[in-house]
Length: 411
Image (cartoon, rainbow, N blue to C red; front, side):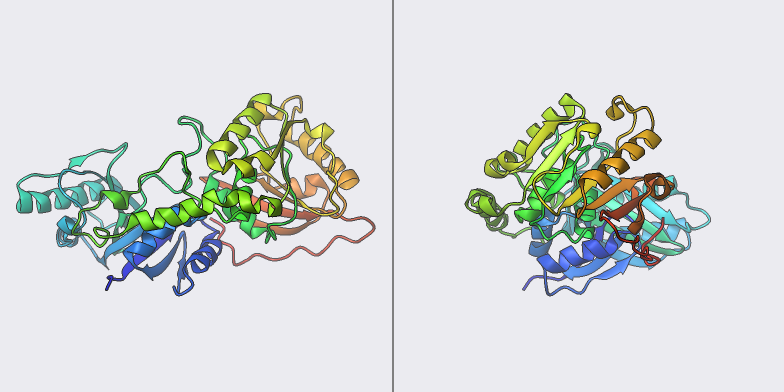
């Protein structure tokens, strides 16, 4: 019988409910508890492996090892040293200790806390094996996470490794303005029926459109047929709860969904990605063919098109999802005010019956676009406070009253 593990799915602030809903969709028996920046639940090691492969909305999945009160550097060392690290990984693995939170003990700083836990881990292995693991701050095999909430410290081991928004289909070195798991969460917030057409008129590298295609086809988020990613749990020791997991079975299920995608291609929604930059459209196309089965990637319509030339396709209803550009991506449009005015005019003239969702850090966008937002959800894109705003485009009606989202985390 598998040992149940305490898991926390880390996610962007304000999107905990979306993550919780996806987790319960993938594992119907779990009872998640929502806290700031994470969703806590109990799962087996095999289920954690499956979630790493399939889940779109979390950033990473951590396994809680201990949670206790600590009031000094000595107590932090003691609780760290008591953990049976040899039951999780061997001393030949490289490690990194990350610390966050608030309310550190008086004699402990953030950097010092990392050194204390690192020393406790190394001393534990030196006692058991006579050797210690090596620290690698850039690309470690094993990540240890330490979180402080005043005197309550939680120490966890990372089952994921590279964050889950790094799906593996972007070329190394390309920095996306919109992380994949955030894009997936925003799409889920729209309550899209997976049938209505979607347009991103300023698509950049194609993140919204590619994530929508994967969601509609019910693809595993972190699997591609061309390149298998390595999760941290695969580097755990044989004595860990993950030592005897049949990962081939988990991957074969994902591969089956991928390979049979063409059989359902006639049911896939119409997706359109436009951008003023030919280079961006070229990147988006290449990303789609790396991220998706070929029949699904081929169905996406990518075109070089300025915002001024945007017209409605032959659909009475649909969604526009976009993260407006800044700097060079704005092309001939000289300011955000001009972009918003242009976009507003096109929406009113061309897209009656459609719903528009805009991710922006412009607090005044709602007033500038001269449309009433029927929903305005506060969240964070990295360190940037943003708003996910919905506008319903219709003719001859009063603006709908704006909904309240007081329950959405603001910071």
